[in-house]
Length: 187
Image (cartoon, rainbow, N blue to C red):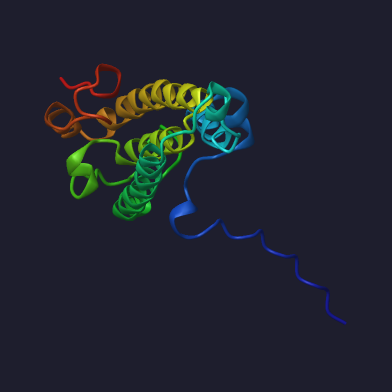
């Protein structure tokens, strides 16, 4: 009679999700910037709320061209996000602390701006705001601007430490939205 062998622990998730650094302790003490991620996810999820106040409560219908423009911007944001995700590959992490050993990506979507995923999220949020004509969603967009600007600044402190060439890249490339002070800072 043989004794059953103990089961080995499960393998870590493979692919892009491995090595993200997420832990229960991090959610409690923000060691890798988990609170920035939490704020970002909460604001994104809040976009599922209905428009408030509803445009009809103002006594007029929301203009169809604005609604259609919003829908186009939302879809464009999704396309840009997919491009940025694809370009990052194994360097992808939802946290503002860069992954150890991750390559610095400066081409493709990252040649246009330093944080194209954040740019795509803001474009989607703008699209929802225009499509719905909602002051609530405008407030969510402004909240995302604040959170993503802060998260990007924390991320860049880590990138400068890991990649000395990041300083020159930062000086030459817009951060998130070119020309907007909180969303574009260059040395």
